[in-house]
Length: 239
Image 1: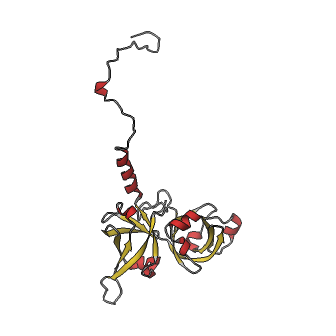
Image 2: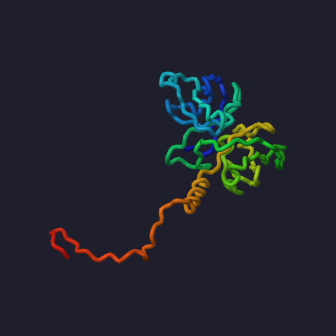
Image 3: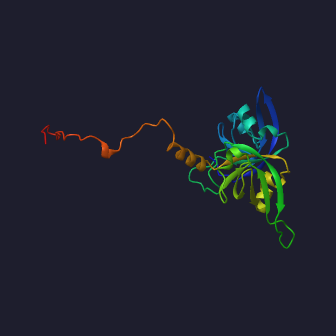
């Protein structure tokens, strides 16, 4: 699990195509520090596994490698990466740590595209104080978004400002613009989207109340009378 609070703006070093999958090498000294073989690191919101051997990790390169299978390349925007591409990086959340964003699985539900950027007000020095971004939203997941709810965009935990049927908006502060890929995202570029998993659990629970072919549980008030049977205590005597 992750929190959607980006720890580092990393970079793609190389991409090796292996059949219909890929091995991607990334530079991220912050998330690489202390990483072990098998650890999880979110790359643009996609949970990937560190595949370097302990010997490779012993080298102080600030780099790590991860395998990306065909399903992930198909369902996310990782297939569009190339050497030099910036990426949002976050290590898996430690139990007991602060949950600064929201619960993020690193399982991409769909991809969207940046539709518009609307600059907000500026401070006395002319620096942008915030910016509103609008992303396209596949109808298959639009029902999970609500105003002031949470959504993950390229691994960044954000609050939904407006939730429409086919798009949504978020407001980004200067820190988010500067420290994540969203600050330089161009119109038309794709992003990974993950909705709040709690919404999907609630939907499933509600569906289970109306699913067909479930066994009928008799009403206790309609159960036949059951005669009282003698009960034995620990000595074997009936009461």
